Amino acid sequence: MSTINAQKSPKIAVIGLGYVGLPLAVEFAKHYPVAGFDIKQPRIDELNAWRDSTLETEEQELKSCITRDNPLPKADTKGLFVTTNLQDLAEANIYIVTVPTPTDKNNRPDLTPLVKASETVGKVLKEGDIVIYESTVYPGATEEDCVPVLEKVSGLKMNEGFFVGYSPERINPGDKLHTVTKIKKVTSGSTPESAAVVNGLYLSIIEAGTHLAPSIKVAEAAKVIENSQRDINIAFVNELARIFNRMGIDTLDVLEAAATKWNFLPFKPGLVGGHCIGVDPYYLAQKAQEVGYNPEIILAGRRLNDDMGAYVASETVKLLIRNDCHIKNAKVLVLGITFKENCPDIRNSRVIDIIKELQEYGCAVEIADPWASPKEVMHEYGLPMIHSTETIENNSYQAVVAAVGHNEFKALDPRQWLTKDGIIYDVKGIYDRNISDGRL
Image (cartoon, rainbow, N blue to C red; front, side, top):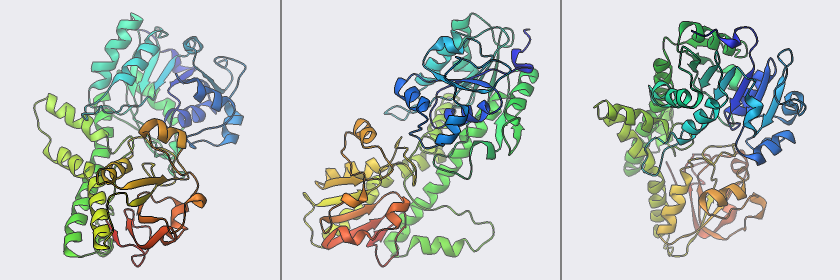
């Protein structure tokens, strides 16, 4: 068995510099030499100009840690070098993979980014190196799907030539309170020795501490159930919202009353998108089906949450009809396109479901979002967007749908944009009930 290279002098390469990889690379670069790798040259260019379009790191942070002088800082130095050149990673002895793990159009796990990242690492993997995966996967994926790729490309064998770890990411985009160092980290390794090295590495930067899982599969399973649990709980309150709406009861009033009990879980109804909660349950469901179990509750929760966009659109149209508004060509302003408030991330945003459904009814939909990039929205969804609320035309819309609770929207009165008989549907409950005509 090979000696673990990183036991004394860790040299780290982070594969993928997005919402997960960049904050992690920055924190490690405060203590170790780090090379950050991304396949997108524009991403590397913006980071070298000390800009982060994800808004997860500050300009001053990037200025203090990014170096342009050395492909991988020397072992006795610290800092971050960002690159698209694979050979710049060759001197690393720890490789951390932080690429996305999406689903395809049929909601099946798509491991393509993970496989390609494993191929990339395999080309520079050396005897004694450790590869750590942070991407969310189903239990078994690291050893069953990723390791064979590493072995094939590198010509080495796991636990003989190289070692593997798994430490699932817990990044919450846009959250400036629960940042990477302040969230407890689950760690694991393919051998007791490599697990100890992986755990020690994260423990050196994670203020909240670590939890060393007994195996890689346990760590994978722990991650995938975190978001599945949240998905199911939100599905429950979404179903309650649909029931109480038929009864003429305000759901938020009910939840507020129920929350007076000490052990009531404070979930609220809403759209469930993003790269985690709306995706991870499908990974667990896929693996469950492979081993012969049909996961009824997990998939029922997914179906209900995935249907909420269509439900919101339907309720909006009903309100318009009650106001004797012609649905065809009715102008509807949707406030927000990101998957959550005060964050530029548009990945897997379920707001698009509301928009498409309204368009199916014949409505003329416009989108406003001060956080999202108009270029990215056009690329991802093929839709134009109003970037500044100041340019929204007053008295122009038959309906306003408040889909995302950005602070900028909370500070404004949406009634200014409505025609005389216009309506407001408040998905997030950000306005007083005397302003909203309908809400979840």
